[in-house]
Image (spheres, rainbow, N blue to C red):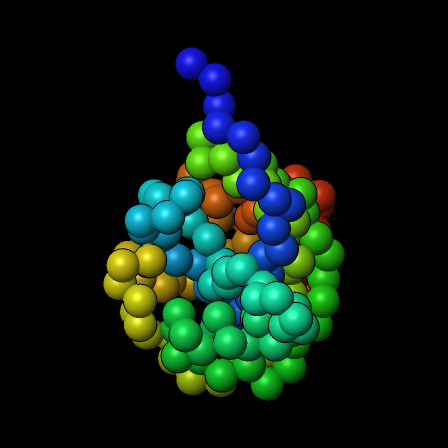
Length: 137
């Protein structure tokens, strides 16, 4: 059986929120990557600045309000089973508030994890970022 034709590359953006030495992750539901741990984030809309997309997605998914958004790096991720190809722009985000499960169809919930003890399995863009050797300061 052959894989579907890849759609993309699409542009995604992630919000890496770090507090007290821990990073915010949620277990994905529904869409591609279900059952994997991911940063908040999503697709950058046409004409939207990536930092704006990060702040929007963070608030939509968690209720957190971004105060500072800093570009970190990018990863190139292919999801052959879903026919998707994403270039994900990762951003370190300073945010206020407490995370809430605002989109239960997309995520089981949000929790904080030490970078050196991330839960498995990781969503492809998170795993790709870890493989680069990048670490939150």
